[in-house]
Image (cartoon, rainbow, N blue to C red; front, side, top):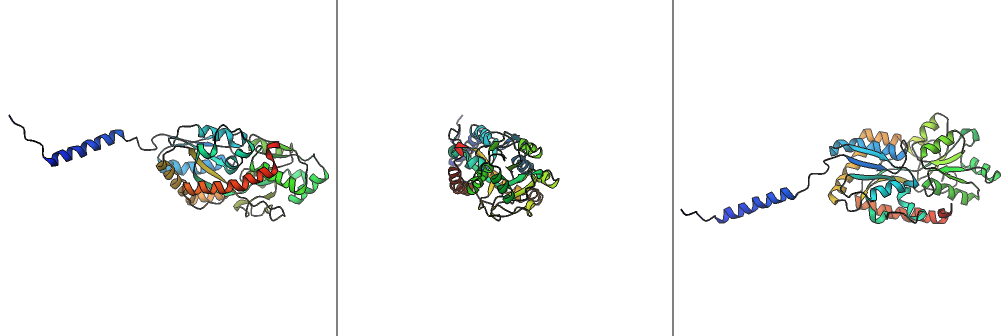
Length: 328
């Protein structure tokens, strides 16, 4: 019995089907197909944790997977950054970090266990704001001038707190000290929660904190705001003058950013970039972010965000070198 030879059309069709089969077998499963871990460079309940949870909920809905928020405080964000830098670049471990952790750590912590330029991939900016200079109300300070006058009259007696050596709070106060010729010891804290506890107890009397977490204590009268950094007054503290308005020019804005381990596929980075900005612009999320005293940043691509980080680094790292934070 003879068998007819296959036609050219049949051969071509068979090749197409075989190719489709091979590609289907080789294609990875759609991302994401399991929960995503969002590591926060900060303490539970502080600004980073607040904003991570604000974007995690809408992201979870659009991506169809839970977003597990995990705080890793310490060393001005170095611990969290290092954990994510060394994670698998598969889109399942992300970092939310303040600008200070990204921009200042390379200056003040020269022996970093990771290279932020090579090991962390920028995805999207979350919010924009400054930081708050706060004091215990028992000191009677109402503004920056009051604090400066007291510190000048009592050299070495007015210690200040921040969330770590190399933090933007540490940098801001060292700049103030240099500008006004003040002697104020620095008390670095591992967690903002601990700093706020000591401020309320008047263990320390003044300190820089993030833009969001002190607000409940200010509203209840447990803390008083003396000023805020940045280029403008922020949504929830419109009654607090900026440091620039009070005669000290410190207008650099801060932000939070989402990052991934280097090597994460570009299609995952682009998808996350789109969804993170979409989440921030949702009316309910926008309201909550502004209620936490930040504004929504303009939508930019991951590459544009990376470029903006390089521009900010020139400013902040220059300030850190002037303040000589390595020796503080």
